[in-house]
Image (cartoon, rainbow, N blue to C red; front, side):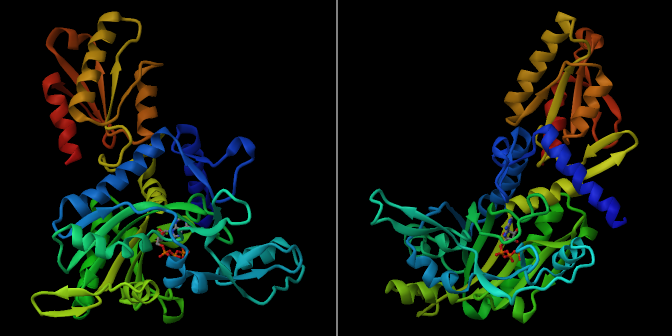
Length: 440
Ligand code: ATP
């Protein structure tokens, strides 16, 4: 595809997101707030489904991982210990013509900006380090207010609870702690829709391992995470690993690989897999004065475990699932989302809205499905059936169920499949199992 075409695809997704209630610009009626986004009725379902699948695969399906939900606000010493106060920086340059600020390492954005000055020579300031931590003030007395940080990554909330989790569960190394939650970064240039936001969500695993097993388990988690995205339908050819160059690695990382997606704005990271070594625990041990070593009973020795981290962005994953699922098929737009991720699992229609018998029967099917499937089911009785199908295709509903006159005779309905558009007649009693099959 040409860049013009691909740009159009992103614009279409932005428009669809707004029109159908996936994603709206944050605080829009006040002119917005750069880098913030609000998830609408369908967006919250899609995002929750992604988080639920993550939690299932990480926590419910495994014995060696437990969950955690740490506070966003933490003692500021945490961020000094973790190195974020000193080193969580991006290189910032300023255009000397218009004073607009950019990231010095985002060369494409710099070139684009230079061309926007139409032939004028653009000089840039020397790069300076810009800290991404967002500051806030806590307390009621003006003078005594304490400076705190909105967490720049959800990771540290896990590491400061390493000992708590060890002593309150029966976990032994190797084991992991999964967490999903908001993070905040003062990004110099938010953009590409939700891709670079100032408030976003992360879904992470911090996996504590014996130092000598770190490399092996690092490899294992890299593969696991890639498989997870593919299992939820992301196109294999649009995914790749990229290893960080030495000078690109975060201050804590011994090794770092990104999972990237071939997006309309280039190959972009949406999950990082890092070998953090014993950086976090040794720093917190030093700064807190608490013993954070692990006693390994089998080996009869104490050590600081290494940490393998998988750190994915929920918003970036949501965006890439949307982009990956978006297809134009003749006159219809289809979101070919994996049914597990689709906001509605099915839609139910009475063939005609002005026939009380049909409507009553359709309502019965609708209510039954809602209680058996335990997931959102859509109801639509507006316009004609063709339009209702198109409307559901556009939001990714896997099947549409129509109650017609034959239903009143023999208790059968038509099920129409989103991807093939084929319709089948099935017994009402078999409808929920057909939907459940798609969800397994
Ligand atoms: P980038 O290089 O794009 O700034 P990063 O390497 O700083 O990202 P990490 O610190 O590894 O990102 O964070 C892990 C994940 O959190 C990223 O892979 C991404 O999915 C998500 N993430 C990070 N920053 C943002 C952001 N500003 N907006 C949305 N998601 C983000």
